Image (cartoon, rainbow, N blue to C red):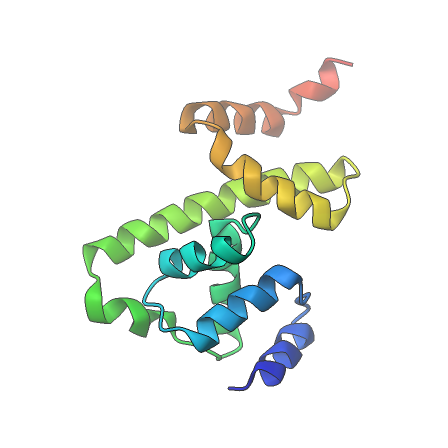
Length: 145
């Protein structure tokens, strides 16, 4: 599939075509990457602000529109590692979504919130993140006012 066709399909599905997505698509189309980590390592050389969750979201979006088949990339060389990598991707995506939602609801610009959520998803330990998530879900912060 050609680059412009992919962008058209992404836009039709409600996706924004950001500079980070353009970088990722160039890497995916021009280079032979066998996993999302490899795409990520190449992408951060071009833009250090790109988070791994952004890579996984882009790959999922490309799968959704039929531009790529990620299973084929992993089936050739990976077995158990594929499952672990998908679990890590799900964990990072959950963290990213959590922080993005909070930042946007707090009034942070969407693009700025995306960047900062990409940074925040890596900073907290699992224990701290889980406690913060429980705290936010309880709505305890409203009682502190």
